[in-house]
Length: 143
Ligand SMILES: [Zn+2]
Image (cartoon, rainbow, N blue to C red; front, side, top):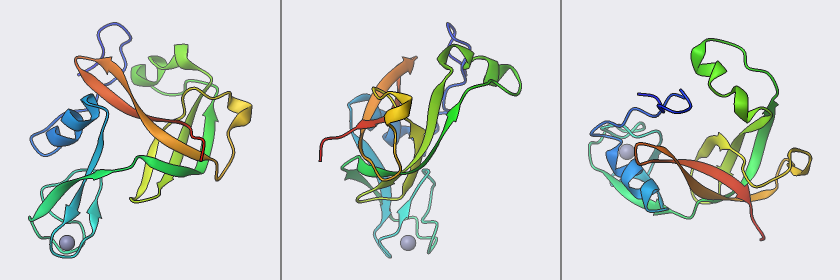
C-alpha cells in the first residue's frame, strides 16, 4: 500500500504487527517482550527472536533515547519509492538507542539538520502518514 497523495510506501500492517500500529495511532510506543527470557523482539514477530517462545507480551516503552548514528539524505536514488521522498530532501535517517529498548531506525523531525549530533537526547513522536497510519519519528528532547 502507498500514500495516494505522495506515492510513498506505507508499512504493511499484519495480524502480528497490528498492536504496534494501534498503539502508534494513540501516541504510544510498544514492543514485544518475551515472558520467558525477557528479550525484546523488534520488529514484531510471532515468537521471541532469542528463545522462540510464542509467549511474548506487548509492553510500553518510554520512546526516549539518544542518537546512535545518522545520515542526511540529499538525493533520491532508486526506483519510484525513492522518488516519492524527493519533496522531503534533505531529510535525516537515524538510529536511536532507546533508553529502555533496542536500537530503532527512524527519522528526525523538528530539528535543523546542522543541530543533530551523535548522542543527543531525543524522544519519539508519531506523525500521521495516511490511511490512519502513524509513523514513529524522533525529535530533540530536553533531558
Ligand atoms: Zn524469549
